[in-house]
Image (cartoon, rainbow, N blue to C red):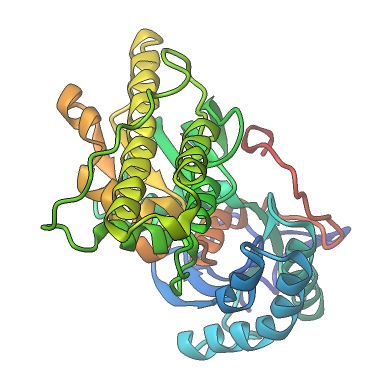
Length: 375
């Protein structure tokens, strides 16, 4: 008799016996934005499958994620995405899956509900324990799975994505303190907006990736010099990307529109924006490290995760100002494909709760707005 069949059921909550003699295997689902994701992950740190179904081709004509289109695409894609995750993992959902996890929030309400309803229904029908996971918690803990030398708590985490720009103090796998957040828009959203201002064709990974790749083209050809604005919010913990977005917008307007700007000038403008945005991240990281030192908090690692952490320019810089000024801090980037949205991170983040028996009821709701400090 396995550990699940020996569980105790109390009002839809499952309390597994405290001793688990084998690896715990999770089927995880992630649908918080426009990627339909499913994965199978184990407590032994094995990724048995990782399936991501993209929708970018559906949203490019809207200039961003169109909510109803995203919901309908999730509804079409999720059954096949889950099926592929199970087939790739060579796992039977009845006998091989011990628990089901899903992104509960934050994210787009309708998109979250597609994944939530599917995961809850599967868990209830199969009599499996179920957990709703905070999306940013998944990003923050990815390095504990992917790093050959995982960071010890407490550590700093820079989370940079389309929805968030945060510096967190990770105190445990379920306790996070926000040290910095954005006063206006996220870095990922700003990358997307500037990419659209420059009329760049989306890549398979979206408008932000298109801007990154455009900047990287023709590295040996001289381009015009464009002076970037000063970094905003000097000496303050908060991020602000609206000003650099406005700077690009004004430049395009003052030059008669993007059609009037030649490719070398457009590339120089894109590079100036990207360098400014990354320098702004580095500036706030230094403040966060200084704060930890002043509070005698012994952080020895900085984890950089979220979709923007896959940006090659950011990785090449290796957060240059950090490494130049504090060699006691290790810098850790998860693999690029696990920085963008995926279900691996959701399954991994759920495992401490599954193993301790702290599972959720089947009737929990999605939480589109959910601070990571409220986990």
